[in-house]
Image 1 (cartoon, one colour):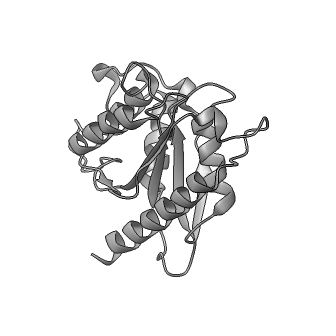
Image 2: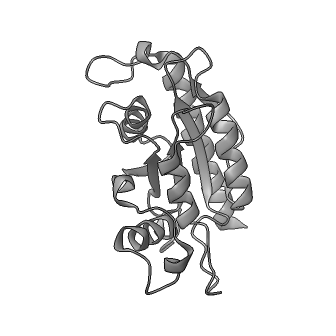
Image 3: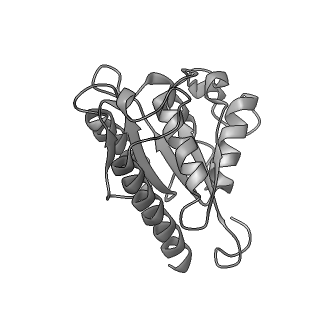
Amino acid sequence: MSGTTTDRDLRILAISGSLRAASHNTALLRAAQKMQQGGLDIEIYDGLRAIPAYDLDLDAPGLWPAPVADLRRRVTEADGLLIATPEFNYGVPGVLKNALDWASTDWAGTGEVPLRGKPTAVLGASPSHFGSVRAQLALRQVLLGTRTDVVTSPEVTVMRSHERFDDNGNLTDEVTADLLRDLLSALADKVRRSVVH
């Protein structure tokens, strides 16, 4: 991170675990981007589709595929992360887990692990009656393993997501919007505390 967090907006990299063009999870991130709550400058990552399957033989500086090197750089440079996950088969989509695997390692011993200690907020949407509860539990377990600094509350687990957005993908549910604002404020607070300490 360059500069101080007191004289500029906090740079947040937002990652959606869905590749679907009309994804409600990506729509949640766009809603967060419009809010810009708590002095956050939110950039939505669009390179998930290009990241190859994790390969330990290529996981070293100078060997990373270009999309992997770009992801690692962007996670490292961000002040914090905002990760939205759908729920597939009670868990996290493989493309999202794959990206997190690439951003969690340091086999070369450089001391640079993009996800380690990174202030991160988790949220998600699903058309089911349970929302993304199980996927977020699985994601939080992964982020525990990567020693990522995750916001614990509030939980934004949007159920029946098809009822929360209009045909243009705009968030229309005020309860969800209020929770999202609270989550972004909590993320901003966590980022600022991580800099102080």
